[in-house]
Length: 124
Image (cartoon, rainbow, N blue to C red):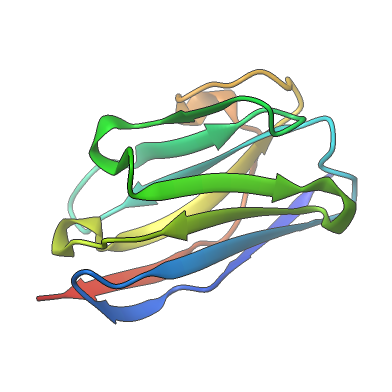
């Protein structure tokens, strides 16, 4: 079993930055693909970014390309989401998720393990 804990969310003004962290325990994340998803009130959970097991391959949804960067430090069992140029429409609960298959995937149902989420609120 893998337990995931997100942190780093908060309230930020539009144009600001935040860095989210996802720390894993229970097992090493080094062979897992990891993704970030988000869910705004009244909306479905949507894919944000994913990273493969080595960190050598990443994938982003179009709305965050050039603004968000996903990275990982397998020695620390941690995946990060650096968010810059934040917009009010980025407001959501952000979740990290992991899957034993090390390949990238943007579908929530492909991920076996989920964190509890961290709130990101971007004000005007």
